[in-house]
Amino acid sequence: MLRALLALMLTVTFVSTAHAQEGASPDREATGGAQTLEDIMARQRGEEVDNSFRSDATGDPDSAAGIASQLGTLGGASDPELWRALRFGTANITASNNSPTATTLIQDGGMGWLQFREGPLASYGGGLLIVTAALLAVFLMVRGRITIDGEKTGRTITRFKAVERFGHWLLAGSFILLGVTGLVSLFGRTVFIPVFGHEAFSYLAVGSKWIHNNVSWAFMLALAMIFVMWVIHNLPDRTDINWLLKGGGIFTNGHPPAKKFNAGQKLIFWSVIVLGTSISVSGLALLFPFEFNMFAPTFAKLNSFGISEALGLGTLRETLAPHEEMQYAQLWHAIVSFVLMAIILAHIYIGSVGMEGAYDAMGSGEVEEQWAREHHSIWAEEELAKDRKAPESATPAE
Ligand code: HEM
Image 1 (cartoon, rainbow, N blue to C red):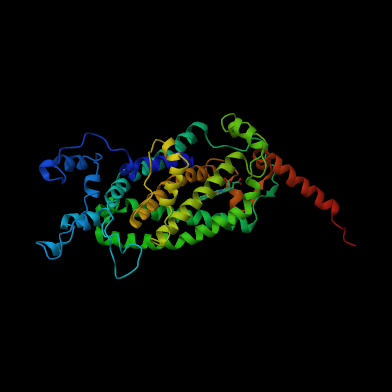
Image 2 (cartoon, rainbow, N blue to C red):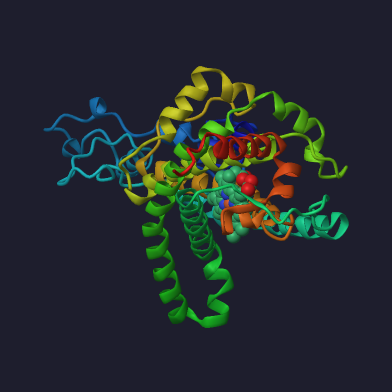
C-alpha cells in the first residue's frame, strides 16, 4: 500500500521538472535567447518546457568589461540574468539573518502545490471518503448486521482493561478531532465561506487550526500507548492465513478460529501504526516549519535504489527549496490521512453498527462469552481455561 501511495504522490506532484523534456525546442533567436510566446503558452497549458536556456543564462562574471572600460562597473551579469539566477537558486546571496529560507528569494513550487491541493487532493481525497461510506452502507444493506449466531450465555469475559480502553478512546477521540479539523482546513474555504461568510469562517478556521495543532500530541501519545499494549497480539501467525483465506467468514457466516486479534484487526492495527506514524512525522515537519527536510533525502534514496526509475518516475530532484519540503510534507500528510480515514471508517462501522456485541469490548470492556467463542475462539478458550484454573488454585479460606 505504501508503494502505491508513494507512486500516487510522486506521479502527480512536482516531479515534472525532473522528467525528460518533450517536444522540439522553439526558435529563440528572435528573442535573443529569451523565452518565446510558444514557451509561455506551453507553460500555461501545463506542458513541460526545457528551462535550461534560462537557468543556464545567468551571466558570467569573468566576461565583465574592465572597470575602466565602457559599462565596466556593471559587472558580468545583466539584470535579467541576475533575476534568473535568483529564480533558479544559483545567485550568490548573503542575507542578514540565517533562517533556512533567508537565501531562497524565489521558489516556484507553490503554484503546482496549490493546484494539486485544490484539485486532485481535494477531489480524490473527498471522493475516497464518500465512496468508502457508500460501500459500507451498501454492505450493511446487503449483508446486514453480523449477529451472534449461537445462544447467548449471559456470562461475560473481560476483553480490554481500563487502561487499554483509555488508550483506544484517546486515539479515537483525537483522530476524529484531527480528521474533522483537517477537513475544515482543506475544504472550509469552499464549503463554509459561501454559507457563513468570511468573518464567521475565520473563527472556525483559527479554532480548527488550534485544535489540530494541539490535539496532535494526544494522538501521538495514544499511538505509542496502543503500540506498546497491543503489538504482542498483532504479530502475524499461522491462524491469520486461514482467517484471510476464509475472508474472516464475513460472507459465509463461518467463524474461522482467531486469537485475541484476527487477521483483519491486525491489518487495521498495522495500518494505524504505520500510517499514523507517517502522519505524525509529516505533521511534526509542518508544526516546526523548515526544521526537518525529509523529502530530498528520500528522493535521493529512491533514485539510488532505482525505485523511482522502476516506477517510471525518472530521476527525482534531489535538491529542494525549503518551501518545497514543506509543500511535499503537507501533501504527504493529507494523502496518508485520507487513506487512514477511509480505513478507520470501515473500522468504526464494524466496531459499532456492523457487528452485534463488538462495541462492548471497548465500551464496558466485557464481551458476551458466545461472541468471544465465535469471533476469537482460541483467545476465548485461553481466557476460560484461566478462569477454570483460578478457582482450583485458590487457597480456601480457613
Ligand atoms: C467511534 C469510533 C470507534 C469505535 C466505535 C471503535 C470501536 C472499537 C472496538 C469495539 C474495538 C475492539 C474490537 C475487538 O474487541 O476486537 C476497537 C479496536 C481498535 N480500534 Fe477502534 N473504534 C473507534 C475509533 C477508532 C479510531 C479513530 C482508531 C484509530 C485511529 C481506532 C483504532 C483501533 C485499533 C488499532 C483497535 C485494535 C485493532 C482492532 O480491533 O481492529 N479506533 N475499536
